[in-house]
Length: 236
Image (cartoon, rainbow, N blue to C red; front, side, top):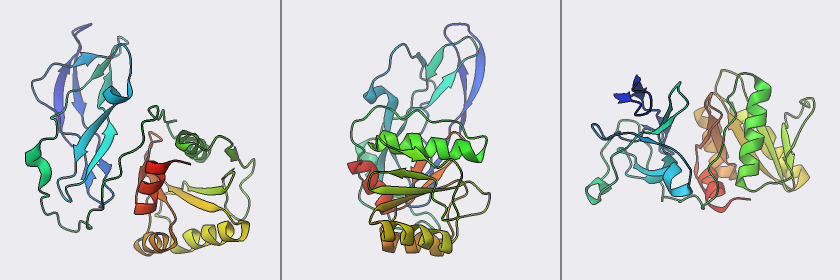
């Protein structure tokens, strides 16, 4: 994780900004490369192009849209952290131990920037997943008042979703149970997990076409497999 000094141009307060790494679908943590020495810019209004940046995974060479790095100063000024732009020389992937083969890049459609809900409790995780499904285009997302024994946390037209908020990786049985529930109801399914997935669970989801997402405590889901990439690309 890269750290750089940042000075707020509004109040002249000094900060240290650390870039956040997110898992590329190939499995390697990836972070936007900060452009050292470039001045930060106060954000006065937002647009799609300004809130997303193109970042290249140095392991598989994949190019994807990532949230623009920002820092919120205590004075109230939100600062945009400049990053190094992707160039033609960034097209050759560098090897990384344990990296999975990269998949073709699927550029998300132009939709408003997702506003996550910070996760402090299991219910927060469910609420954040519900917001994400709505962001993808599901307008009738309903949360279960009490989690049923089947483990279904969210429902929408043609969709059910499960949110695993425990501290261990999601297991194969949970993925297969979600798929069976979706099969019996003739709907599709989506899985969200805070701790990731065991290898056999991820492999099974790939085979069944179940989109898998992992969420950090900021409440921002990240795709884990190809079906999740496709869901982001096409939306509901």
